[in-house]
Length: 109
Image (cartoon, rainbow, N blue to C red; front, side, top):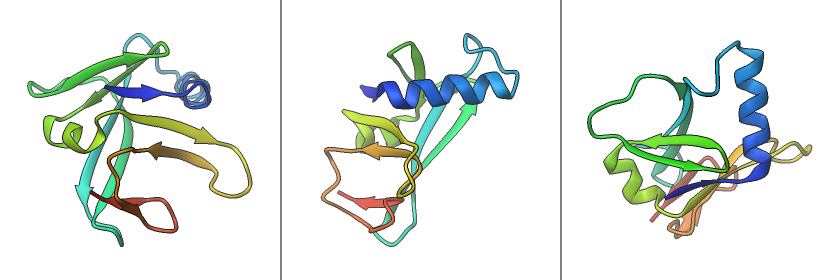
């Protein structure tokens, strides 16, 4: 399961509304790719096209979709949002990460 914190839910709803995208037609696609200073990088985007191998979750009223390979790295991860001066934006609270870089954009398992 991939979880969505209340802070992330509020920002996702705000962004979808600002872009004129209906919440019931769009979802958050999260994935993991090679890269970054720690070896793996998170990706997050809005999508409305499902793929055959997608893993689909819904938490806190938000639909989250990931590919099977990425799910192995994201299992039990919580998507959060911070509006503060330091670290503003979406971030992943990933219990599977053995280390992360100082900017928080990449991780290793």
